[in-house]
Image (cartoon, rainbow, N blue to C red; front, top):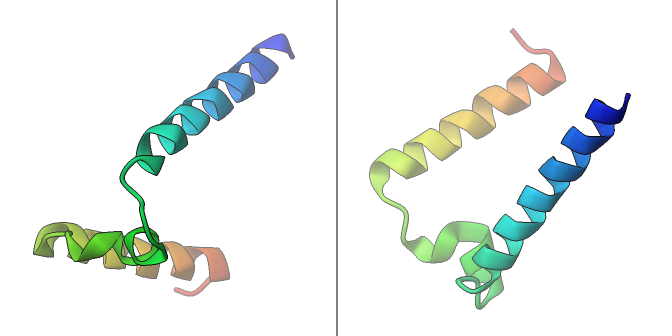
Length: 62
């Protein structure tokens, strides 16, 4: 059981560290919502595909 808590705390610490690092680059809500319109075509396509398939799996569509 202690391994589970240690893993959870480590994960939460890493996520907090990433958010503090990313906070430097986010100035407005547009930066947060649409990445400041700086994503390339490949990354935009991958993001949309992940959203589409992730939402479909979450809702149970086939």
